Image (cartoon, rainbow, N blue to C red):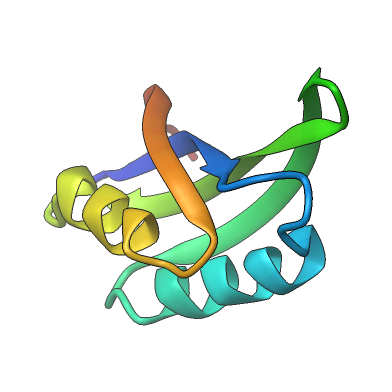
Length: 91
C-alpha cells in the first residue's frame, strides 16, 4: 500500500507549555504506530506569544490518520489537534 504525507496542527494548552518537550512526546507517539515516521515539527506563531506545532509525518495508508490524531490529542499539554494536509507520497 502507498504512504501518506500528513500534517497536523497541534495547539498547546497555553504559552507556558514546553514545546520542546511536546515535540519529544509527539515523536514517541508517532513512533508507536507501526508505519509512523516523524519528519519535522515547526513552530507557528498564533497570537500573544502562543505558538502551534505544525507536525509532518509519513504513515502507511493502511493505518488510520484518525487514530494518530486521537493519540496526539491525548498528550499532556495539548489543547487540540487538526489534520491540515493529507497527500499520497510518490517515490
